[in-house]
Image 1 (cartoon, rainbow, N blue to C red):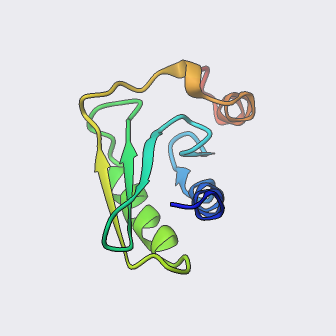
Image 2 (cartoon, rainbow, N blue to C red):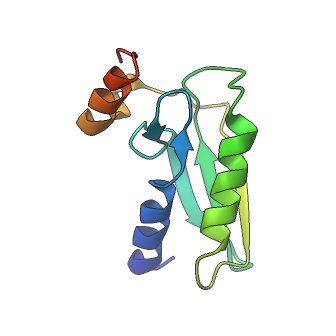
Length: 106
């Protein structure tokens, strides 16, 4: 994956919002990995702040739709990487402030 394509994907992932927090998934530290696949696809690995997230399917569909609309992307695979844990240290300061405006202290 070229650097330009990764930048486009990151910009696109900032458009995917965790509806509970009102913060994009990249700034929330929920994106664990982004990789190109051999079949012109993109793999996005997620970690979740909570198990059983009711918005998971919604966010995964949004990722597939938005990343899949990028030039050169033929398919998108999104999976939760259960072997990794979400960690508060990966949240950006902007995300913390936005979450606080929604009543969350993280």
